[in-house]
Image (cartoon, rainbow, N blue to C red; front, side):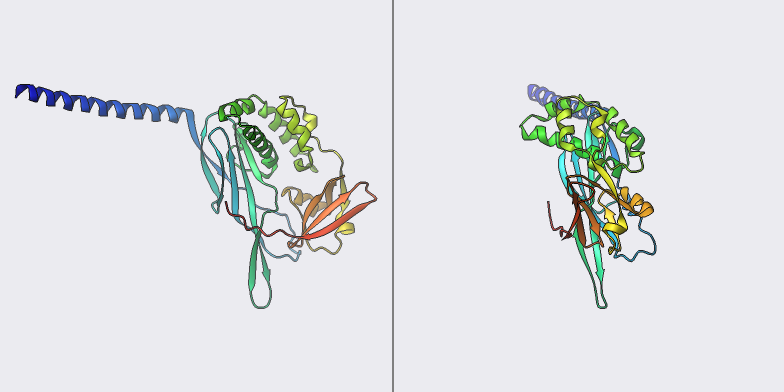
Length: 294
């Protein structure tokens, strides 16, 4: 009987020790994870198209955001109608966040109001941890650099490299310098990063080489708005900050030998192309209706 009592006592003690050990292990694991990770809330920007009060236009507003997050831990897309998104990130490891506005347009007649969605404007974004002063803000000006990092994540993963390899490859690049050059160029009044030749830039980055010259836009010309869109009530650049220039200076910018799209009167896309400034053509197509679900 005494032996049974000792045996039960020993089993109870052993069980207690195991429980305490498991709790201690979990607590230690949580503690070290907290040291390694941080939670960041990223805030979406305002869709300010800089239209003037006397412009006759239908309402344009963001109905939801398409959010994309890429890192060693994330490869995800989702929609949200919130004003921000919170992400648990590994400290000092590369991560990019993109937010593309899904915009809704309203059409009004004497009887009813109809709405439809489209995905037409360029994304806002950020790259972590290389912009600490604006780390919590998803900016239109940083949507291009976030897209570059996204494409590098995707290209390496498409070749079946594991996440750690891709993470180390991306982390080896000097993103701080990239962002500093980008920020400096964004101070220029007529700079649009989406006119950068993307393919040569990606090839240089994959070769672990970088020159600020690859962030310089080439073959971009300005044109008077009234000459080429004289019958349009509103003309919007798909790169949101550029609309301030269009509104103030009544000019638009297009790149030679490329298709340059503009939102015209909300329901039409004006595609500008030219091989010389004396041979400019504009083709109008309908705004694509967005009905994608993830």
